[in-house]
Image (cartoon, rainbow, N blue to C red; front, side):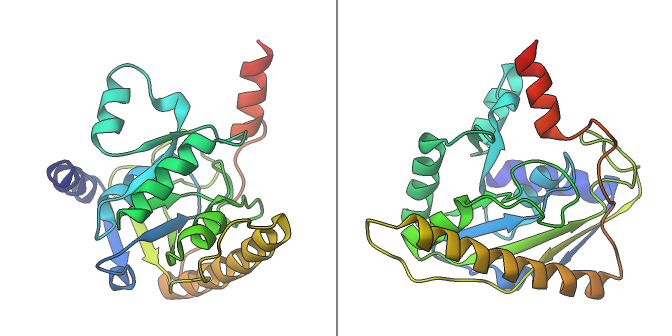
Length: 227
């Protein structure tokens, strides 16, 4: 995985002007959860290769086909059903964290504005189960304004990757009540919104806005299921 990360890191730096901010906020040892905003296709690769530590990121299961399946598994990525509970994916993340590794997750669940308007409970649940810190990762420039969810920014564009201050909650034994998970999720979302605002100030950038009409990943998935 490390050799692949070096190759991909070099490729992304040749293609884009990549600026990584505050990578030192990722603890050098022990379990860590990276929680990123989700603008476009490029967010996952940028998280995987520009994190200071190897990342086992949750990746939509639709991508695990053919040669891409072998590539993603070799890179340590974890297939996940984004639109339904996926206990197998959560168990894999827990195993990575209990082994002292790093998992990556996009709490919004699908590509969109990157403003955390939608927010799922997986990151907070993993933090409550393991006590691992959650390090926010804010992306700018991975999708251009008006571009669709599968687009890539133009060659030579600038991509900012901002690591935020960690959020942490004590590990809680079973059973973890639904209300407790919801409260932790709300707390984590508020923290990520503060980090997002700070990242905008740091970089002087704004997010690209909504996807084109009809391009929501959830809408696409619904249309595919109906055909």
